[in-house]
Length: 125
Image 1 (tube, rainbow, N blue to C red):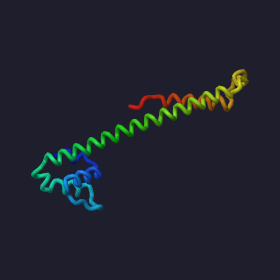
Image 2 (image 1 turned 120 degrees about the horizontal axis):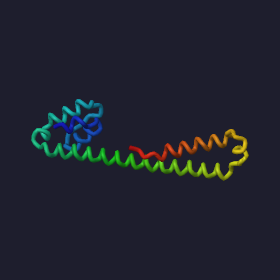
Image 3 (image 1 turned 60 degrees about the vertical axis):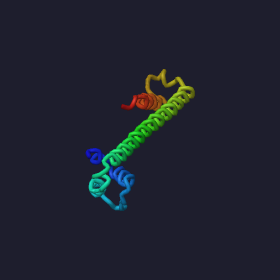
Image 4 (image 1 turned 90 degrees about the vertical axis):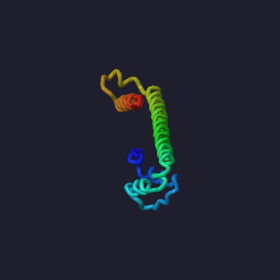
């Protein structure tokens, strides 16, 4: 069964436990895979193993999706914070630095905030 080869150690442990195998704490990935493949359940009831593997892969995909959503929300919050900082800098900034033709420290900070906001607004792949 090729699905077992794709699983991580923790996932192999979960599959083994779901099909009723006794798993030792210190087992390596190869030992877990061999335990599953040598079991009577694997040999006689391949559908049960296939179902357990599919459940584990489905849980992995759900977790990956949730992690992606959490990261997107974190980036949105960070973007809002930076936009708020930008608005505060604009509201509190003085206009004398524009007349001098050189950038003051708050203006450089403002530029870095703008770059940060632009970076954070790029959609993740």
